[in-house]
Length: 222
Image 1 (cartoon, rainbow, N blue to C red):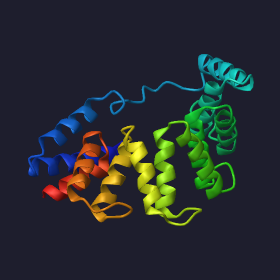
Image 2: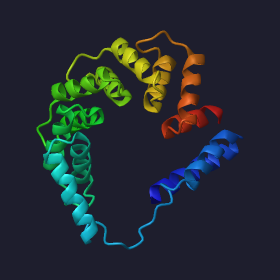
Image 3: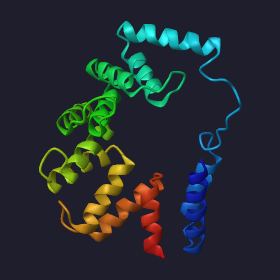
């Protein structure tokens, strides 16, 4: 949380210097949000009887084929929420949920393969799972397919394919893709260079709360 406060303070100061009022409004929303202001109330989360019962019920549902329970169990193993952090178990349950059609679990399975967490690293498997999620309409699947084409991870660099998949994710208001596509228009990679369109996209991403887009926009106004 300390790093978040430092970043917000720096961004707020820069916004004031450049008279960027809407950025100040976005910062205010972030600071006032419940998620930003969460504090540790000292509870022994994950060790009391109620938590143990919840986890037991979750495991039972997961073992009985409930894909949402399988995904939730994977999330707990991944983060160490109520269970000892275990990426091997997280991978098993992410992949099980993914195979049962949980779309965001398909994205997470791709992430585990991409970074070699709980399984051997494989760009090919990462791409396959991201593509499954993308084909099922998940914008983060589309975003990651685009990034693998852009970075040449497990395949040849292909900026046109990257732009195509970023465009699909942009249509679903994926703020990471909006910013990435803006940079592609700014630099003319995979698309014809168009600075107006580029900055329109970057501003849209910033207004949706993308920190990198906010900083890029403020650096332009400085």
